[in-house]
Image (tube, rainbow, N blue to C red):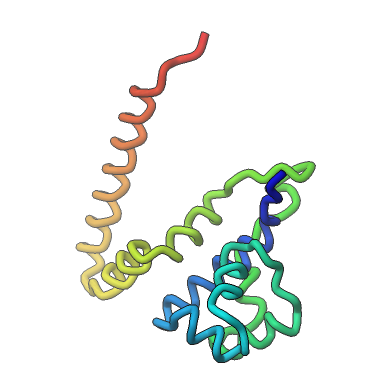
Length: 144
């Protein structure tokens, strides 16, 4: 039986990855700074291995963020009652920002100075997402 990562460990790991990518640091470079292999960093970022308190302190110093940064937006026990994890929208956002395309989109959007253009882009993306959702719902067969 495959053990699934704890939601908090996944969240902390995804925040490590997000900050590392924002700083344009490789897993190998972060590992070197901490005396670890890049494989260990991968396991931390996926939540497969839990990050201990002293290691989290080292990571926070290396990535120039306070340790509390890694817990911002973390799921609470009400998010996954009785041990059953439910993907929250905030976790989805954190996971997306940790991807190359999420980071690229975020950086590009942040460079747009005109608030009217930014608003139009948000409206466009929201409209596209609604259309995508409607298309998926139409393709999904209805139950009895």
